[in-house]
Amino acid sequence: MDSPIKPGMMKYCVVGNISKSHPDENGKMRSGTKTFPGGRKVYIGRRLWYDAPIVLGQNRYNGQLDVEGVFLDGIENIRLEKCFEPRILEEMKFMNDFEWPGMWFGYKDEDKKAAENYIEILNKIKAGDDEAWEQYYRDEMWKHHWEHQIMLVVNEYNWGLHSTSDWERVTWTIYYDGDCRTRTYYAGSEMPFHKEARGNLDKELVKQLKSLLDTQIWRKNPPADACDGTAWEMKYFAPGGERLNYSGKPGYIYGEETLERIADLLPKEGVYEAWEG
Image 1: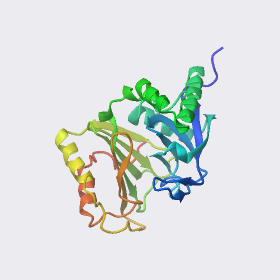
Image 2: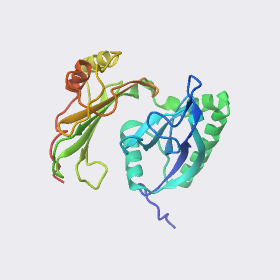
Image 3: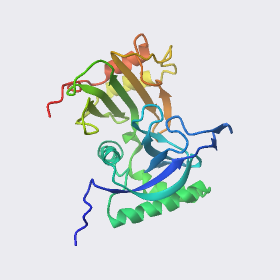
């Protein structure tokens, strides 16, 4: 008999909770991470950089789904769960298709077994077993060349008045190899997103972006809150997932030369068009 569970309806997931209290790299006790509060449930992806897997969860500040590399010492109660939540599944599908191929497990028995094996590996690495990580890196991580790793993630938010067909947020995801994916969200929509596009940036444009991203000081002033216009949020990553720079919480970038120049270089054709679905 065929399984009643079809692709997209359920995934086997490795999940955990962000530790409520854990030491940072300087030995100071912290609660949660930059992105997630202590106790927050997160979905642990298969991209494991040393002892810091990429995890998916609800951002502590804006409630939206976000990703972060979190050291295993900051994750507790690692376990297997079935996920049926459409919002989570849709985000995982996008990440599998557009960002990290094979990031998440599927719904079949072999996926369940693979997830159980991954939990075992994570617990070994958490206990200090370096050979377990080296084996995982050889068997899984090396399949994806470092050049196809995320370099820049930019979110632009529409803070002005808008109708249900107007864009609410645009996300650009740019890779070191020039691959660029855009994703447009629409106000009042039932689906998490409605429009995607993919293209390639030329090498000179990637070089210009990289030069701006390597500027140490992005902002001269803290992000300013407002009720109209557009707000921006930018994250710069090293190959492997370490976050190198962050523009701060969403806010205006007027007068912030580096951030304005980064925004000017982003491909914008079609991303602000009204939804006609």
